[in-house]
Image 1 (cartoon, helix red, strand yellow):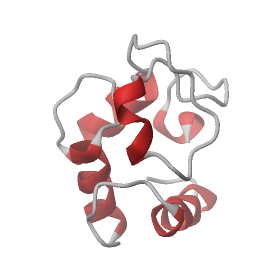
Image 2: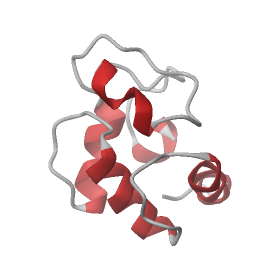
Image 3: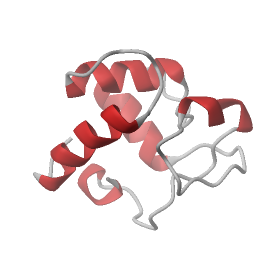
Length: 92
């Protein structure tokens, strides 16, 4: 995802807040240091969410809309699969 979005590719969604943990059940490579993420900021820019670098429910819902899945604000298995299909095509 980081490569497709043109951000530093380290395999981790960095700088997230513990407050956002419940919205990301299907994401395992997350660093909760709370400084925000280049990847998430790039995603927010593309989907039209407030750009703060945190993957909260509004960002996830807008991402889900882009991916054509139910907009519940939780990055669960269905959203992760839809995202993976897009990334396999080298696009978001």
